[in-house]
Amino acid sequence: MLSGRSSVLSFAQFTTSLVLAVALGAASPAFTGESGHDHDHDHAHEAKDDHDHDHDHRHEHRDHGAHEHGVADLAFAADGQKLVVEFLSPAANIVGFEHAPRTDEQKQALETATTLLKQADVQLTIDERAKCTLSDVTVTPPAFDDHGHDHDADHDSHADFSAAFTYECQAIDQLQSITVNLFESFPAIEKIKAVYLAENVQLGVDLTGKQSSITLP
Image 1 (tube, rainbow, N blue to C red):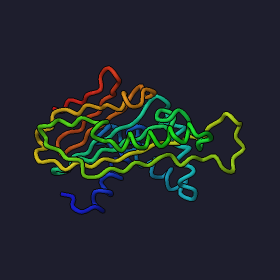
Image 2: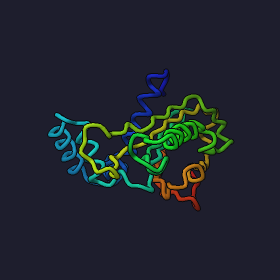
Image 3: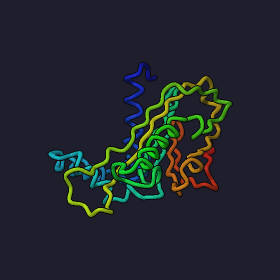
């Protein structure tokens, strides 16, 4: 069982990696049912590109369609009585642009969106039978990549919002449903690719505004 803040952060980082892996079709063979050949190939590719990892990693996401306007990723990972949630979305879904704010309106939109995402209990409705209490929230606004590039005036670089929520639960085995309210807060989100991982549960589902609840077995 995880314990301490550093372990929580490490577990949260794991779920973020898993969301991206699922979005890129590169999750572990046990989760996807894919052969290990592609897994080994991915590791070789990563080693080849390690010289400029961050830059190439961003482009890899774009090439595989992970950064798709209208689509966001959401991962739930249960460990003991702890529930960690990771959310990742193109900034266009959240604020309507993917460049550094250029007007007072855009600056306000960025602040408002960050505040909304911090309201985890508004964005997610956790089954009350699990008796979960929010213990930590981290929201990371986009790191806009506007400087030093010869872009057209109307062209935006890709930029993402991310958020991490940690819940401490008393009866997580009683958790049967989670309702995602992000569609109401951010109408530009059309679909959320959600995954839920626990000791004996591996569930993936596409959520929409009309079907925004995850039902657990």
